[in-house]
Length: 608
View (cartoon, rainbow, N blue to C red):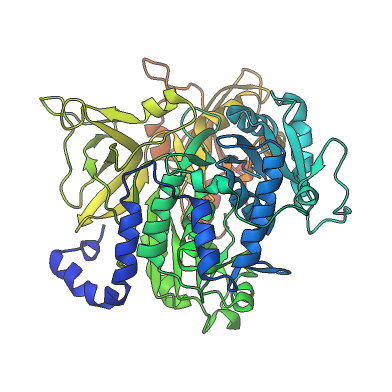
């Protein structure tokens, strides 16, 4: 950490005058972020209807071919809500939704919010048993699938527990299928909604902050994805914190969104920020570094949603005329590393970086409200950063059994108090929710959420992200569960043991996967077959890029793999006597990794 990152009271006060025009919006944001009464009738549906009343003719959504005003978008969501209601969807019902980034997806989620129904946002990159697990985990009574993902669903259809779930099909605007013809066994949702009423259904007035809005899938340390509950209350807190206090967008702004809409970064952070000010969202199916600046120019975007990896991709692109004098003035997201923070800001002329910290399941969020560099910002929530024993993987408790707070600038575990004001909604599985709670932290009977993340206090209630703990690492903007990857590797012929962990590659964000394998006697590594197996069973971001062959695998007394030494050695041939392999970008096989190739990777000769 640089000493320049520390925020003293004097530095904080000197920074305040430039933010004075934003004070009314910031105070409004604090109000929404601090509401304690979870019975209050505030919701995503309320926010959309409020924006439609205030900015009826301003654009709400746009893509390459379409633009919808707030009036038109709200009317569309209402038609869908009345259609869902006629089909039997009601308050609290779970509806699995699997579409790529399309205007239809946001309209469907808005419609469900108006009924108090819960949209389970299926990760569109999942396939096979992981996809089947995600559906079965939340027991949906209704499925809404985009035509572009129908094949993925049909591959696992027989594995779905609820074969009686109603199935709705959404035509793909980019496909050649007749949009009026749903496949056999499916209902055409847009056709059903076409003749419905356009007024706000009365159900929306009964949706409360304590009600679930989305189910967001998150990878943990237990293998397969977990479904975390995003309540309307947490969404409203984001509406206040990110929308009013953080970005303060208005009806003349356009937020360019390429992040996948099955992530909270898109449907909670970016969408709430746009709705808070009546701004438009310009939606793209998938991120493209080469098309980024031409899209910004087309939409005259003033803001965009990011993850750190996306920013690195943009910095790695050759300079173009279209990036100069661009219309962007702000951005919102997370994972922007200090090493590229200043270069990104300077090259592209972005004035405001609203970095944030939050998790789908957690009860705390930080926002860089005051536009300092290299910080996740400020939070009004009650939190602490406590000392953590990395060797034994547990918080440090003192003589009286309580946790110990770190000093300013010292890295430690971030925990947040669970209270009526900052409730913990947790996961759909109560056991997994309880596992994330620390009890008797500073006094008997208290309860705190364990974020599993290392942070440091840099002053004036601002924090700086350090790293993630446990058996989850982050690559390509996604959390990767090592247990899930170990299970997939264990199914490959000849693999007796598999240990997976994250390792860093110079010039990239996060950590990519590395697997230490012990092969059965008489088996040799078939690099091509292993790559094909990983491609078939895992999303690209979860597949390991490095392999180390071990003679033996060390475990603890409770049979957990000892990963510390493996992580420290990484894929450096100078530190490892075992055979090493790497899968280079664009390759369909693993090849031996020697000192020369390791040097090329260290020099960033390859773009992973």
